[in-house]
Amino acid sequence: MGLYQMHKLEPLFFVKGLENVAQYDLPADFAFDGESHDSWELTYVDRGQIVISVKGENYLLKAGEMVFYTPGEFHSIHLMEKKPATIIVVTFNCDSPGMDMVQEKILFLGAEEKRCLATIVQEGARTYAHFDNIPPFVNMEKVKNPPFGSEQIIKNALEQLLIYICRRGDNIGMDLRVLTDSLEPAGSLAERVKTYMQDHLAEKLTLEVISEAHNISISQLKRIFKEQTGTSVISCLIDLRIRAAKKLIREGELNFTQIAEAVGYDNIYYFSAMFKKQTGKTPTEYSKSVRR
Image (cartoon, rainbow, N blue to C red):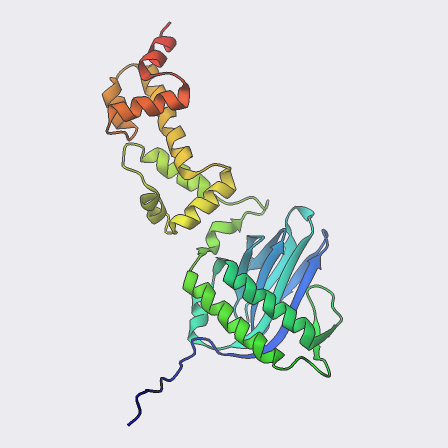
């Protein structure tokens, strides 16, 4: 009787075919009116920013980010602020149920995903000759003597890319990047977070509480907020609290303990230390200065 048991390997993703793999350097005046096709397509921004249009809405996509278009989904591209950009496009056939996990999301790629994508592009360049290579179009033709196993490497790398993306789950809903007709963010995440913190200053606000209120992870909250404001969530929260405290001190209707509680500090000594760190004065010193 054997000591070993054979385990069947169940693939989560099975890529059946490849229509396109290409890297495009887009000129500043680039604009593409759009297309739809029967395959899945991923677009990754390697440099710059682009605006994609899907289902009648415009979305901002930045360097290091990826989006998937579903089969039959009409999509178009133009550039943000008329600056050049570099994108990678891979069009492929896959009907695995796991593809549902990448729909309608902006995905952030980590080191493992980027390595997979680089492998796809490198092996694609060795395996296929391109003609009519005018963005975003490309026609691929298999070279006469491609490297041994190159197509399987592309297949494996693409399947691994999909697995790593789903495993990390580092993404945001596309609604967070929807643009108005003027191409300005429509109610950016940072604006909503600031309003939320302002409305809940007296409460115990943590990154976990704030991220849950906006249905995103803490890492996404921190990244996007810093990207949109240039400062951290916690620094902004402290600033909002101290500004509110200064206003309450000027009004003179509450004592310092009540003011501390009103702006979210349950320890008067910590409140005083934070107030001095932010303003250079203790609450008492600030109160005297505004009453002179």
